[in-house]
Amino acid sequence: MKDAEGSVRRSLVRWGRSFFERGLASGSSGNMSARLDDGFLFTPTNSCLGFLETDRLSRLDRSGCHVDGDAPSKELPLHMAFYEARPSANAIVHLHSTFSTALSCLADTDPEDAIPPITPYVVMRIGRVPIVPYTRPGSPEIVPLIRARAERHSAVLLANHGPVVAGVSVEAAAFAIEELEETAKLVLITRGMRVRVLDPAQIAALEASFKLR
Ligand SMILES: [Zn+2]
Image 1 (cartoon, helix red, strand yellow):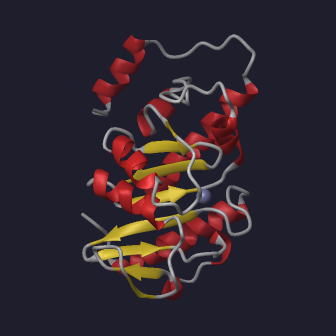
Image 2 (spheres, rainbow, N blue to C red):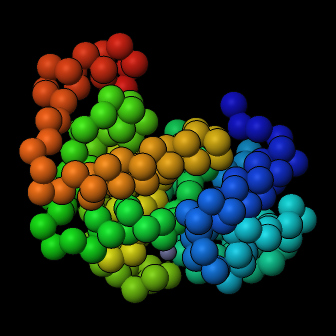
């Protein structure tokens, strides 16, 4: 069940501030949104996630038309494509966080599986993460690329840009994108070392125990 609008607004502001204060979002980078019963809330265009205000968040109707508050993030098409393809998504967080973005820039990152299953938590919270080919930020060309992946994946990396993660709530999406960022950090600091990844049986056991599929 979706939360009442006031509580979703406060949650977006609280998480935005937390991302900013911990260096996961800087300047006006990153954006967040949440699905309501009768539309959507978005962080405003060119806003800093650290200084959001509950009553200035962009309010959209069900079809994505702006109806109240400041103008929405220009990355709105990306979020809307994710919501369309993934009915269970009630919130989406997109950051330019350093380690996930670094992975999205590396030429030899596997485009179908960017984050190796090195811990059980990345399997439980994120699953397999594909890379979405590069498009100009805000371009509607992102829409079919997201639609092709969001049904099967709750998280993607935009090539040379950064992570996008969907969740059943703002908090769930926030936890998941933080898990993704921390795992990207582990992947990068262990690069060039011999790394043991979870084997298929260990992953299958997690999927069965936590009903991940
Ligand atoms: Zn972005």
